[in-house]
Amino acid sequence: MPRIGCGLAGGEWEQVEPLLDKLLWDLPVYVYDLNKRAKPVSPAET
Image (spheres, rainbow, N blue to C red):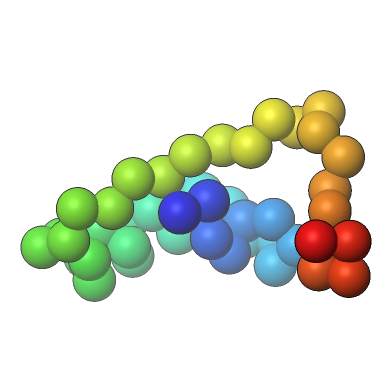
């Protein structure tokens, strides 16, 4: 999953990550960063 809550929502990963660790500790979750230079694609364009 992307860094949920840290894009348009404006959250700080340093605060969000511990919450996800606490809630999803038993699930294999991989977090990735998107290329910041990539052009965002709106749902209408997909």
